[in-house]
Length: 219
Image (cartoon, rainbow, N blue to C red; front, top):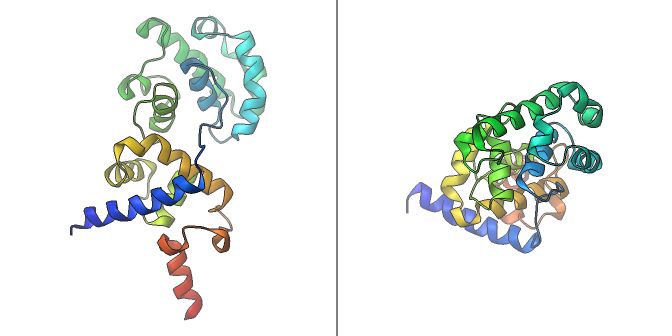
């Protein structure tokens, strides 16, 4: 058995366990169309989904589509989104919507290369939009996915992009969109950054991190 085949076999076991633990996963950002998800995801950088969901109802009531957002100024948008962080977010959102109007007919594009042309949109944001707004297979790697996938031994990459590539190799493509939600849920609820709740984790027997911790504790 090759190394990749072994990794894929372990991944299937881990994914099956995650699927049973989190059967009803979905995006935690509130949205009703690709435009809303794009804006919400851009706002969520270094900000909680809970805070973004508090802000976006008024944002979308005021700037209800790409065209209305493109027609405003970042200085006008910023007071609406100030609690989500940097002023640059407002500038990027307005600039992205203007590019969508000028280059994509006012429709949020459904391709990675096109989405990452938009100001403030990297692979993670683009992947979130592809997976959740268009149901196109993608593997968004946020801090939770990065941390949990490495602890479980699904990936070893030291960057989000390398981790994304590794996960795409070992996770079946048909599971990509669900798998990133499973990893996020597990990271938020159990496999926390500072103190993972290993004693409550259903994946102990499959987890590289837990195995290493047990070895260290016995030495």
